[in-house]
Length: 298
Length: 141
Image 1 (cartoon, rainbow over the protein chains, first blue to last red):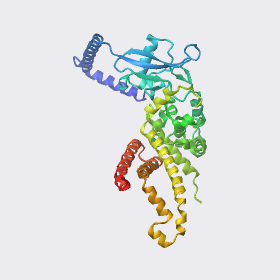
Image 2: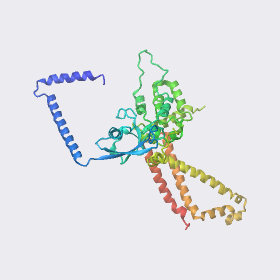
Image 3: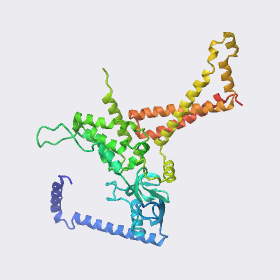
């Protein structure tokens, strides 16, 4: 929370003290109103739920990819069908969790925060790379087909091996480095607002690997850094605080043979990114940076 | 990643179904590029058979009896060639328009509307192709 918080609470205390003499106080009125509305909402929700239960219960059909190399009889990949009762606001991840908890506890998939922050549950849903926790069921056509990410080795069911993706991410040295320090020992390394704005979108990457999986070039070229790694490189190369030396080093990494020049601007990564990072734009900008870096007019 | 677990047709089918504008543009650009290269070499091969016409007498040239004119006239007499010419124009126009689109993409202009510019180049290609049909097909039937 912001550092302004204590001041604000003081203020509300003051106003509370001022209005104490009023009977009933404005705060009381507001709280009563709030309670009344909450009651109303609860009654309405209960009524809706009862109505839904009374009506034929709506279920969604999920076809989930299953494969388990360790169990004989499950080594042949297959699709399992699950019928999951639909609830308003249900995501693909919710449905999968329901299926796992209710029907088949061996159904395996990664998930953690369930709110599109951890990036664990990128999957191939109805033919597109999606973040399962961010994909609403009612926006999808039924039956919903859930598969592991393409172009990665399937470990089990919906879990793929992301080791290669992480290797590529690490190849661009995804951490802040600089040779230029501010004067004072305890001085902060400040960034201009404009510069922060420039790299803002690129900092939103959650390492879900959806872009890497959607990229046709990355599928055919194992050494290609991939959209996520190049975006990471962009995030630091464009950060003015890193200084010229480090930027030079970063450009050398991204302009190598399997770096930015592999990108053929298909925009697949930009389409699938759950965080709406303009990946292609960043890759193109790095291409221009690389050209500017190497073009010399004598 | 290329040694990934083979999911066979399942994966291929899904991928084909979910192609987005940028992906189609890429596929079409590759395809039209190869067609144009193929045409270029055919063009060179066919026309080099007509090189002797450069040594022909002026009178023969004017009468249209030289090997160059004969080659062109006989080719244009084939309905298949007329139809293929329309196709060639379509391919060339798309490659040019999409090339201009890719130029904009490389310059970082209008990346947000890359799909719209792809559709626009498709529509323009269609319009120009249709408009060219009378010219190419005239007298072929």
